[in-house]
Length: 214
Image 1 (cartoon, rainbow, N blue to C red):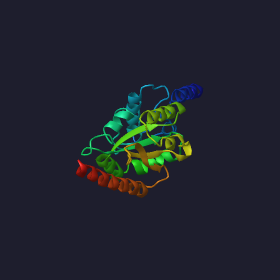
Image 2: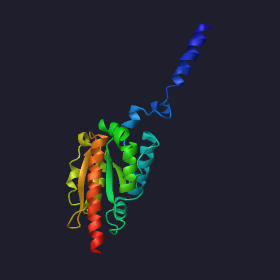
Image 3: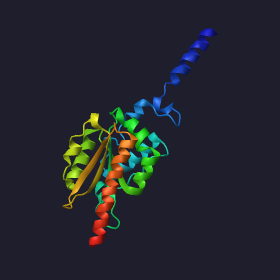
Image 4: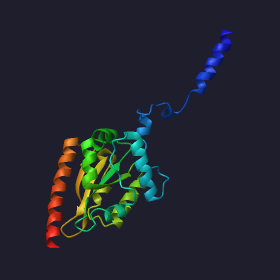
């Protein structure tokens, strides 16, 4: 009788060898899932990639997450720095890497900080992408070249060790689209807020001058 019970117990235990991701609570994410890309390598469509990125980001990091623009990179530009002066906004680009040890710390403690989330929502259009897979990094590089970001080599030089990164994009004095600030995964909330406040102040001064000249 005992042998039968032991055999049944062993079979029952074997049946419970489920994927780790299925055994976690709603508010707890497995390390293996956290290290995965936010955009699977097989996704070809840019807009679909952005939607998957946003859904996966929200499921990993909870309810207080930044509002990501749902559309292509060129559309994000058209709805931010390329708008008429009265409506113009800065564009922020968040670039993720699932293999970076900084990603989860930066996202949970900085990018999802309530003050940061609110400031981004009011002052920026935010677009997100994932660079975990080389194919996806090549995609964003192609987008930056096509949209004529004059210093796109900043993105090309982003290694896993430097990621994640938060870029701020605006038009320069010659009306060229340019990355004007870069923040990295080792930056604190205060450091990120300082950069965003500084660039927002400069942007408002620039926009005021443009409005006066109209």
